Length: 323
Image (cartoon, rainbow, N blue to C red; front, top):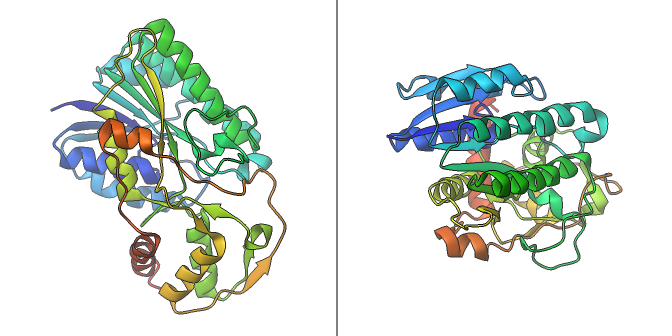
């Protein structure tokens, strides 16, 4: 049995990663502050099955609290740290930038400090496809320039990558940053388009279609993401000079916003009331993951189509909300 620290464990990706680790027989210590960025009841819903497992323990705290973060690392050693806690959302960063500074910069640094004081075999942390900005490349690769972020959220994730690289070099801490591409699925984040669109379509309220529908996203199903995270976590970088790498985890199949909405309409059996509006500040036009590095390294091979993944989400949504 190996011991994992999973931060952001009540979050969408965190809860699913922790559940998979527990099923594999590992010990998991989960950390989350259960903030109210979106409905905490959904976070408790994700936590409930984890708390039933004898090999899971939960710490409710804010990693921006230096003493609390230090205590987590000093209480017991971890074989692997999977740091997924963050203030998410591109648009919310325009309204509450302080939340991103505290969680994504201060909290991240406290996790880094803990790993330096009590080194795990591997630190894996969440980055984002947002770091690519409005790239003109057909496929986004880890070697592409990422020095023009379009939102504070993206800027904080870019900062995480730079800091982690420096620490990996100075302390020889094996570290991997994962650039996630539009993760979706059952019990996902309510601020994401697939979730809010489903809610609005069923309620008969309008949905805002940004940039008049001329957007593309590389939607990646949660089960594929979890498989990628676990495979990467088990394969720390071994470079002698700087044991650090960045990897894209995406579906490698970008979908237009129009096709995405049409798929939801078909699954819900109801047409959306669309309001076509201009581009939202901070958004990017297209995300499309080149996943050759992750495929080559750990055999990452997402297999869930958007239609199949959204069907799973809609089934869950109707049951959860009794819709």
